[in-house]
Length: 288
Length: 192
Image 1 (tube, rainbow over the protein chains, first blue to last red):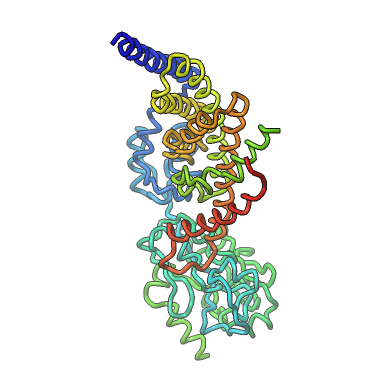
Image 2 (image 1 turned 180 degrees about the horizontal axis):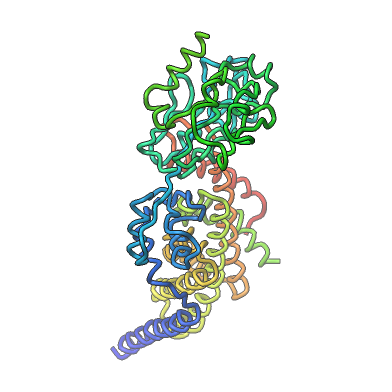
């Protein structure tokens, strides 16, 4: 009885003592390794969408929240949240509301299966990243590869491939995170502020004669648009490709009107995809 | 010589993950990216080594002296939990990004079977203090090796055309099984 009693007491002492010892150690450690967290960060984080899409350029929503609290990022930084988040952030910070510029993705290639030719057969992983290593199946080596890496990258179901093998963006769902632009190995998808209306739907840098041969809607470097742009230098030829300088080029449809291959277009990118724009254009282009 | 054998044995031949199938939760949970996997492995190695030290001391100077060997499980778990808390605070202080990428798996080192397993194995096998430390470090290194290899495979799998039914957990478990088979090849290396 006495033995049982002593072992009973010793057990309690040992376990209790160990617990106490560790508790003291942790208490000291927690003081020493204390990390100060600004309560504002939590509040700001609650306003953000928490999708960690990375469109703002920071590692995730938490990092952006920290930068916002430190005033190192503007309250319109969150592209995914748009105006709604900017407004709620303005409320948290107690500053006036600011207008968020909406950024959207634009697919700058019109060379679908109808416009280009297949001059190779690709058998391998059905991803653009892999196919790009081989040059792809199409006659144009700058064209959309058509395996939909951008569609896979889109977290917001705002993209799909159309029957012509080109990606279509649903602008009611696109929040401008830029994931598709990063996923595209050929940099065909670009992020543009909403106010831009004039686009060159081609990335081909081949000489005019070659470009014309391999795709019906390619930029053939005819320089008509360079002359048509009302501001000199607004559109320039760089590597046989028309490049628009959005800083100075006025957004009107004059350059688009005379483009012989219709690769320069003017209008809302939103309408271009929604109203079966691509399909209509193909028909016209192939009909001559 | 014996400590080297113990170390290699714990790391490769009797790899805790691939031979004993302990610690599968973080093995599957944190093996998506190789940099996170490596950091998780290092954190676990730190915990396993320290655990080997502390549990050996507790066992020798408290439990054996007072004839309280039946308290092994309780006291070992207590020590492990405290250690993991300490590691958590340390990582949070030194690298907040790593702290977030490890997420729930960091506190879950507490419940990693490898840690308790090695403490109990060391007692059963009557290792000396130094042997016990190397056993703990070897267990951690073995876990790190398994985790990093697995994460490398899974990063490659991202680009593979996996049949739909096998996507996600099924293909990962198949890979783990094959990796375990490959590690069985170490069985002939030496015997401890």
